[in-house]
Every structure is written in C-alpha cells, then in structure tokens.
Image (cartoon, rainbow, N blue to C red; front, side, top):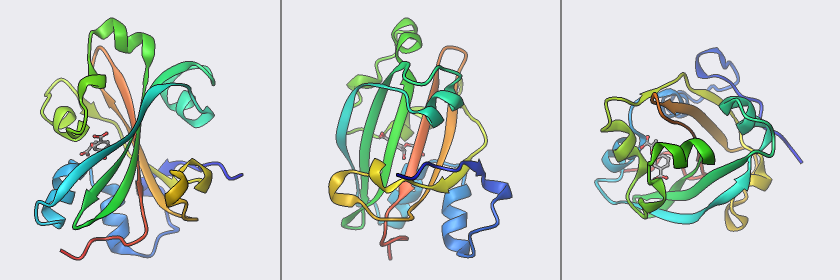
Length: 173
Ligand SMILES: C=C(O[C@@H]1C=C(C(=O)O)C=C[C@H]1O)C(=O)O
C-alpha cells in the first residue's frame, strides 16, 4: 500500500517529460485546457459524491484531524474520446454546510467552471506526487500515475482538488 509524497510542483526534479510537467504545473483551469486539447469533446463523469473520513494527506492539507468527516466528489474527466483525468475534491463538511454552498448540486457540470468564475476564490500553490494505485477507481488502477493537488480558497471555504493524469496522456487532439 503506497502513500502519496506531495512536493511543490516547482521543486520536483523526478520528471523529465516536459509535456507532463507543463500539464501538472499549469495554474489555469484544467477543464478549459482539456476542452481545448480535445477539440471541445469534454465531459465530466461523476463517480461518487459522499461523506467520508478525511485521509491523512487530505486532513493535513485542510488543517483537519485525520478521519474528520469530509465531503468527497470523485469524477473522471473525459476528452478526445477517453477518460484522461481522475479528480477527487474534498471539503470540510461543516464549513461547507455553514457557507450555504451547494456543490452537491453540481452534477456533471465541471467544478472548474465554478472555481475559475468566482473572483473571491484563489488557488494556492500546486503540489505533485505519484498517486497510490489503490486510490484509483477499480477499473482504472494503473501504477505510478502522476497527480497534482491544490487548495481553492475563499474567505468562507476551502476545497482540496486532486487531479490524476491517467495513461494515454496527453490526448492527441
Ligand atoms: C479544478 C478544475 O475542475 C476540474 C473539475 C472537477 C469536477 O467537476 O469535479 C474536478 C477537478 C478538476 O479537474 C479545473 O478545471 O481546473
């Protein structure tokens, strides 16, 4: 059972693939970038939205105790005919309810559209790591996939968004 080893994207020396590094460290909307790469063939497949105990790495990033109840959304981002990215978003359930934000009503709309269209929300620095295979959906368990994560923060809420680049990357547009 592997665990992630999050490091600032700027400090990571283990990646020689410049295309991958560019996708991992880009601070703009991944949704927008995927749409462009896939000639606008883009969709969000929601796999799961539910309350779960925070994992240790998530709890540390969010300033919570491990096991604290968090709201989790897991999706596959499809473009150019295939799933390219697995994304897992985590937020503190109590803060979430108190803020009156209804991310649970997002459905198959992209969270990126919401996050990047709200001027009150900013993105904190990106960290990258290999992603533990056992945390990928059962039918997408590939070893050694690169992932990135960052916090999206407003005065009311913080969301931890983690994106895992699946094999077959990048899409040939
Ligand atoms: C953060 C973004 O939103 C993307 C959309 C997500 C969703 O709808 O659940 C999750 C993570 C992201 O890959 C983005 O577009 O950069």
